[in-house]
Image (cartoon, rainbow, N blue to C red; front, side, top):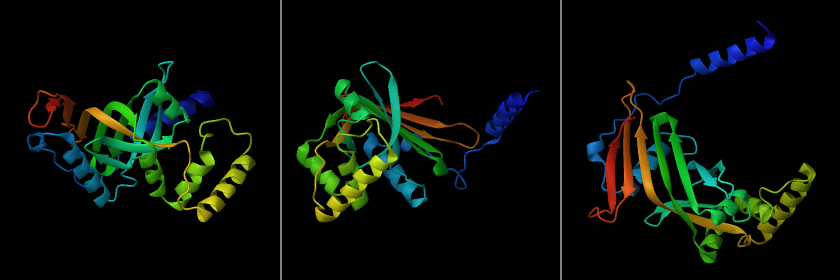
Length: 231
């Protein structure tokens, strides 16, 4: 067997031997107790993930599709979840911002390994508006403000050199210290108005629980239809 074949087999053996690290016994999710609408359950699960010590429980994968119909995915932070939808921020001139302008639909995915839980959210995405976007940026850390200032109009563009990045960030940090209420013109707060939300709870014997909510104006009183899915 060649060295390349040995390496490939060792890699496959590594993957087969990996296990997901749970934090003790997995929580029990009785679908009969699920609320009529997804937002209360999502908030509870995120709060429980934070209390369980889940690293970055507000991090999520954001998937968008551009005019070429090719999907792209990245990790971003959840800024809020309310009756309007799930909030996140980015530069509208970035790749994801451009793709959302072309096709204003997206999907979010949360994965909390310690509790064996996942949540998937999909729907139409809209801009919150200039004032809310500015307020969102002001509510972030000084380092996040500096990053937004440095990346305004340039995120996802080709970078000439790392030194160019360092110079831009140094200037942005100095401005953030002088002007803590500074705004980045391209920074935009987006709100995903969900039409489908799915909750997934792992079970030790792989009898996983999947509950899907679909928006249905005829479903009273919540406006959501709830279904149990095969795992």
